[in-house]
Amino acid sequence: MTRTVYVNGEYLPENEAKVSIFDRGFLFADGVYEVTSVLGGKLIDFAGHAKRLERSLNELEMANPISTEDLLEVHRQLVDRNGITDGLIYLQITRGAPDDRDFAFPPADTAPTIVLFTQNKPGLADAPQAKTGMKIISVEDLRWGRRDIKTVQLLYPSLGKMAAKKAGCDDAWMVEDGFVTEGTSNNAYIVTKDGTIVTRQLSNDILHGITRAAVLRFAREAQMKVEERPFTIEEAQNAAEAFVTSASAFVMPVVEIDGAPVGTGKVGDIAPRIREIYLEEMRKAAI
Ligand code: PDD
Image (cartoon, rainbow, N blue to C red; front, side):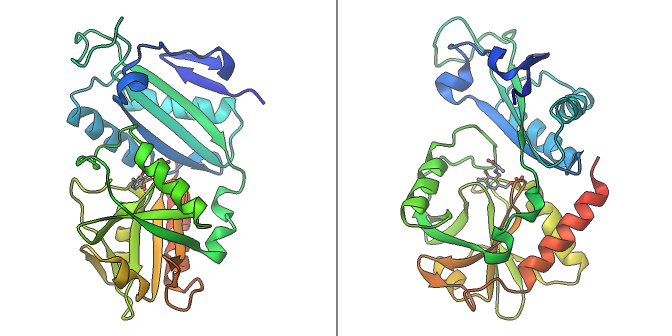
């Protein structure tokens, strides 16, 4: 089926949508993005994604071409026009397309490029992997130092994902100075043997996950102990459980790290419980 996508104010069939070869996103990865999930035809945590988008744009001194209200309308139109029940909405804003390649930013009146498209994923919240868990490898974190900005510079995470696949695993956790930063496209957690949920504290080293914020809030509300601090691969291998969070995977258990089983090597109790609470609460709050 041909998708209807959104480009610079227009809804178009995907094969008619075009962006300039001079676009700064294409030439310099000079763009930011968001991925928002859709469950039951409704948007999960749209407000959180809109707020982080604003922050990413501000950090890069990039103009925002659209109000939050209009952005919500575009998301809803795309869900509607593409008949999405469960899936994802990808949004990208770049510094636009000047008429040549130049390292210096283009004139301030250069219109940003805004693109949104849907990914149809029926049964997104029922992924079988939630029952079996993920196997991960560790790789050195060689990304730039502003990982809190959700830029489209995703080559290194993409290489990490491929290294995991080549090793027969599902994903990679990145390690800097001996401590886990995050997954290639998710935030990383362990559950210690005394039941404490541990995840790295917010800084420029990691993306400030929208799912992370909700999960930590729900965990604290459920009287679970939460510690925001770095942890090593060794600590993770010796933990009771491990898991990741993201807008596309929600809460996904990790059962193996660099060939060593985490806990029993099977999905434990805490990650599935957090996943259940997260999905239930977020479905209720979806708009
Ligand atoms: N990735 N860390 C990184 C490096 C990410 O790319 C993502 C999201 C997250 C989780 O953030 P959130 O909970 O807001 O989705 C953490 C998206 C899903 C992607 O690139 O497809």
